[in-house]
Image (cartoon, rainbow, N blue to C red; front, top):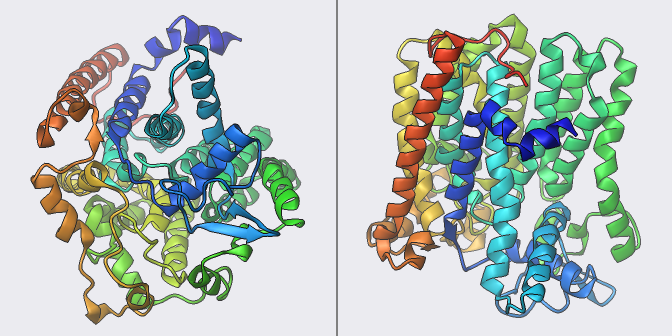
Length: 501
């Protein structure tokens, strides 16, 4: 009750102004654009939301083959069509959509498809992406970053990686990462206080389970966190609390598959599209063995390279060397190494490695926040590191802002057969460089707040620029006041980093 009262009386805002500035600035930035073309992946998930709220069913029969709901990401069983995705994001979307329908009905307002899609997206993906950045900020403080260092790294992560484009569409990665980081922060905080056995392990497990309910591939992180808990628990038998907590949120999905398919399964087993069905039938749900040609394309090549989009993440490799030397955080460095290696190996082993119509290697998004903590140790121990982070961070923001402003789902650019057998020497052309860069500089950007009030082309970005100017001034004032009250310099590391309530 005291926490609720603090929120209602704005006491929490006064106590944590930096966190609220992070949240508000990113939520508005992520909400600034509206992409009218949804794509198969998005339609598959949002069709389930519509079916649940409008028809009270899990079947997407009324939507799957009709424009603009059409999707080939679907399962077919016993005469009916279903989404082939895990259901967490669709269930989250049902909350704002139900509220929106109620408001529209109360005031007798006609609800358009564009409005419903926009509201569902910003109050799921965009909202939780902004909240994810706040959790990351607190996590970095636990690693010993100052407020200024943490802000710098959080904004480069939130605006200079694939976080930005995928926070503007109805995809599950960022909602899943919000819950993942929430779980990790609980574990890290209690571990640093040498009280992990007293930690709310069931609550941390619930957060991890909610992440798994949003996205299948979070399983790679989940295995790492379970091992992390097991290693650091003194009474290792207590790990059952974490495991049970992570299983509880998956019960709705288990019941969903029992109801729809008659058994506990993954809907990918009932894929409609033959290419998907054949691909998912290879190895373990489409995962076979690592492919070095694919590894090249998902790391440094302009076609899908994560370091092409976000060169600031290259500094992870320097930071992790410094971090692993710190005995207190060595297990966290090993966790980060495992997660990064795990996703690179997974993506390079997956048959549809390019992710369809997508900006960058979207399957690598879950590893991004785990590449940020090593940069804290780079800032603290390596000369000129802040300069390098700032320069590469600015370049990264420029690279990821363009697909966010145009469309995070550009065409894949090649026939599927070519991509399935891609070789390094094929030198696949980047749709971002070929299509989206020219479109951006010709002012052909997505619908946005600026265009809604009549500002054409690139002029539509002026309100966003003015907003960030105001945010920058507010952040500067907030940091100056915080340093004055705390009596600390901006580059003095905190002993623990946990902001006090």
